[in-house]
Amino acid sequence: MLELRGVSKVYGGGPTAVHALRDVGLAVAAGELVAVMGPSGSGKSTLLTIGGSLEDATTGQVVVGGAVLQGMSKKEKARLRRRAIGFVFQDFNLLAGLTAAENVSMPLELDGTSARAAREVAMTALAQLGIEDRAGHFPDDLSGGERQRVAIARAVVGERRLVLADEPTGALDSVNSEAVMRLLREISRRGAAVVVVTHDAQLASWADRVVFLRDGRLVDQTAAPSGPESLLASGPRPPA
Amino acid sequence: MSVRHALLALLSEGPKYGLQLRQEFEARTGEVWPLNVGQVYTTLQRLERDGLVVSEDGEDGPQKGYSITADGARALTDWLQTPSADAQPPRDELLIKVLVAVQVPGVDLHDVIQVHRRHLIELMQRYTAVKADAPEDDVALALVVDAELFRIDAAVRWLDSADARLRRAPRAAAGRPAAPARKAPVGRLGAVSR
Ligand SMILES: Nc1ncnc2c1ncn2[C@@H]1O[C@H](COP(=O)(O)OP(=O)(O)OP(=O)(O)O)[C@@H](O)[C@H]1O
Ligand SMILES: [Mg+2]
Image (cartoon, rainbow over all chains, first blue to last red; front, side, top):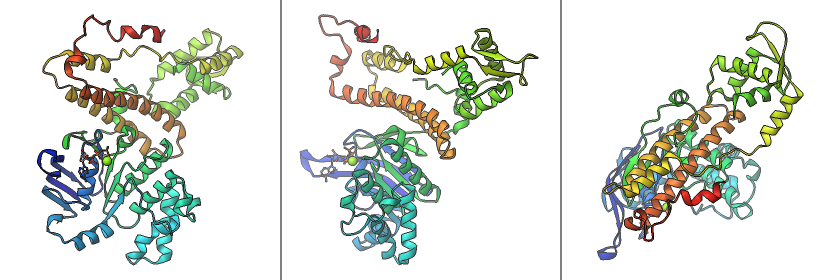
């Protein structure tokens, strides 16, 4: 669903150039939930913005749903983003004049879903995140964590085939963070490719695969999960 | 948690048969804490010998009924309120490996740390899968799994901070003792741990 082939990103030039990504290869299949971890400045956000077509790679190829981004016009990319990609970024970008529910249902309505159906889908997503009772509130009247969950609900409703989330649980406590990861996992099980940037190992452990960035390079990744059976065999203690 | 106290806790709800105790133990904790059958019955015998439970007359085994005594109830409350002896000096294997790696020339510390980080996160993935596949209202299971997850998470965070620390510190300073020779770092924590 999302594929980065030999992607590098250089900001600026000359001696002050920043190599944010170096020769990154990553393929995320439909139905897969991938977590990206790495120290601050290692290129995690850059990877998401390039994978989401918000920025261009300096070299290398980005393929979303079979389409190579490099060949697309700005308009085509914008259309792809609206239709197929859900973003959760750190500044939530909620519209102040709309209620929480309207913020979530609006993208669906723009794409032709009836207002009633869109509202129903929005309410379901808000309920899964435990904020259905805030549906009628405006963003200014929500707590930081509530705003964050509205933004997540907005990113996952509809037929998103690719969901990209950058530290989506920053303002949330651990129980609410878990609800977010459960929801993202569910979205992936329904067939979307999901990429989550996080520095929190517990959240990353919801992913099918965890990849590690360091200085712009993809240096390591977890093996395919071996399932809980092997866990029981090896006993409950981590060999820390 | 010991099997002893788990059984006392189950009996604090009322008298139960041996088989029932075993099944309830498994239902509540078995998924992450497998137990063999014999362990339940031998533990019950020991609890009886110590006066913490009493049993009906008759043959030992699954059909025998047990109930908790006043001493047993007291032992259970005492245990629940006793802080665990977790405040050991950080002498775990992971710390030792990283401390040793700092001193070995030619070893890439970040690689060493990454191997352990990946291993721990893979372990966390397996625990989380247990939680993810269980019904959301299985609170007991989630609590048990979370306890392990937080424990491993602490180790991962320690690795992250070690990684960042070693990145900042020049290698020589991290490894070699400065003159005058310092006492080993773990030894210097003696006063804190006791
Ligand atoms: N627009 C930009 N112009 C110049 N440099 C940039 C730009 N965006 C990011 N960078 C640099 O690229 C590198 C990678 O940044 P990125 O935001 O991807 O890191 P990150 O892994 O998301 O870090 P954090 O965990 O702190 O969010 C950093 O050194 C950053 O300073
Ligand atoms: Mg970032």
